[in-house]
Every structure is written in structure tokens, then in C-alpha cells.
Length: 450
Image (cartoon, rainbow, N blue to C red):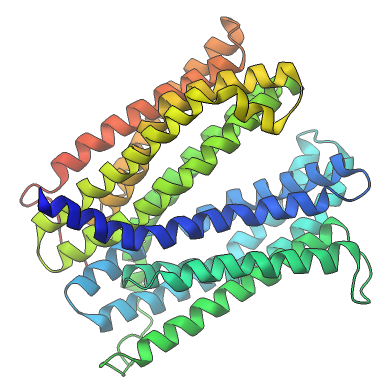
């Protein structure tokens, strides 16, 4: 099938920079953890930083999910060569980001008090408080970055997105060195300095993409922005109708794995450490189908914008094949080298045993994780964000986690029980979204977005 080779090439051209960008996003938190780990009382520093990052991103990523409808609108407009409408979506997406910022910042500000009420140790909450305060001031540039990124990747401009995140890691690392430890004449700020460094890096990311958008648009044959600059409540409402289910789907997924972590924490430090090893490995491989998912949303949307459902179908299936192929290979790696991988994280034999066992479960769901991630993007390209939300809600919260709880605490499977429940949830989600994608592009099921 010669078309399949061409589709693979087109998808990879768009997806590879986005995959690297996703890895860059993940790396920023890892660098922060390494840098604060060199402080005195490193366990408290790492714990407070990790808790603060987790709590902040639970709010911020939900907010960014509300902007995912831009993928659909901009890619459809670009496919039908309506750049004015694509710009119009960008402007209103940025207005949405501005309006969302105070809501997100207020929500984040409640976390320290809530952690106190939940009984989290003050020795973690108190250093986390100024760290979270610093992170919170980066909310506007962060959500603006997400809006600008959605626009650029939907018009096939992806290399600046990759550059922004890679170079932002350098900005963040230098900022950590200066602000955490007090170099260049500044006083040491400890983990609070890490928060301000991340904030500065996010301002940098937003500025890089803003400059890129202005440069790219200045080269087009359509120089006027008069239509685009109109604030359109109807367009923002349409974006929210698409984005809200996508944000809820992200919340269901993040919440499920956060809930699993909380349940496993009750079992003690050894199961929790093994869980973190397997979870970090699964999160790393997840970055690849996540980048492919963004490419799938764009390519499906562009084909539908130019009224080519056959091209949209081929773009979706080729992206799903790429995502599943990679995750199948990563699953084989987990099976073959599970103990070796676990040893990279800890010398403790008990932790290695738990981590290696959970990596085998991670291997079992790799294929379905890749399937559900890329299918979610392909469906978003058609304008369907409700199906992934419902699949995640039912599979994780009504089946996977309850089953995992029973296996863990009533049948005494331990962490293996929780991961078995998560595995079943991912199998259900992947299967459901594959069926949904197969049915989605039948005549009369897809509308144009303008």
C-alpha cells in the first residue's frame, strides 16, 4: 500500500518535533528535582517540590485542556485555506487563556490550606507554599504558550515548538543554578528559586512562540488581521464546548493515576517506590504516542477541512499504527529488561522486585495506552471529544480503580492489584476508542468547524 508509506512519512514529519517537545516538557520537572535534591535535607526538598509540581499541574493541565478545541477549529480552517478564520480562533483562544488565568491561579492558591486539612506534614507544606506561589505567577504565560502551540502545530509549524521547549530547559537549568543556590550575587532561595526559575522559563516559552506566530503570519499573502482581532463570544463558547470534555478526559486520566499513587502509598515505602519506578517508565514512553496524537488531530482536521474524508481516515489509521507499533516495542523492552530497568532507580532488592513486577503489567498495557492516546487525537480532529471523556470516566473510575482496590486490599495483591485494575481500564479505553474511530468517519457523522 504505497499510500501508507506516504502517510507514515507525513505523520512522522509532524509528530517527531512534537514528541521531542513532550520529552522536553517532562525533562523540566526532572531537572528541578535533581537541582533541589542537592540542597540540605534533600528528602524534604524533593518531596515539597514534587508535591507542589503535582498539585499545580493538576490545575494548570486541566486549564490547558480547555484550549484543545483549537486543534479542531484551526486545522479545519487551515485545510480549507481559510487563514483568517484560523487567526480568529487563535485570537479568541488567547482571550480564553487570559480569562482562565485568574480562575486557575485562585484554584492553585487553595492547595496549601487543603494539604494542611488532609493531614500532610507541615515540614512538606510550608516549604511548598512559596514554591507554589512562584509557580502560580507563570500561569498566564503557560496557558498562552498552550494556545500559541495549538495554533502553530495546526498550521504545520512545529519545529519552533520543539526549540522553545528544548531551549527553555536550558533557561530553567541556569535559573535553578542561580536562584536555588544563590549565584551571581543573588541570595539563595532554595526550592522557591526553582519555582521562580520555572516561571521565567514559561515566560520565555510563550515569547518564543508569540514571536514565531508574528513572523509566520507576516510572511503570508493575507496581511490583514481585522476579522481575526474581533473578540467572538460564540467562537469562545464553541471552543469551550469542544475543550471542556477534553479537559475532563485529562482530569479523569491524571486523577486515576494520582488516585492509584495515593492508594499504593498506604502500603508503605517499598510498594510506593516500585510504583514510582514503573510509573516514570510508562510516563516516558507515553510521550511518543502523545506527540503522535497531536499530529493525528491536526492531519485528520486538515483533511476534513479540505473535504477529504478518505485522507482523514488514512491519516488517523496511520497515526494509530505508528503509536501502537512504538508502544508494542516499548512493551517488549519492559518485559525483557524489567529487572535491569528497576535497578537503574534503586539498589534495594525489594524495590527492584516490586518495580520489575509492575513493569510487566506496564508492558501489558503499552499497546492499549498507545492506541487510546492516538485515537483520542484522531477523534479530536473530527470534533469528537465526548467519547474519550466517557471512555476514561467509565473505564478508570467505575471499573479499573474499584477493581484495583478490591484486588489490592481485599484479595491482598498489593500494588499488583492496583496496576491490574489500571491495565484493564486502559484495555477497555483503547478498545472503545478504536471502535469509535472506525465508526466516526461514516457519511454524515462529521461536521465542518468554522
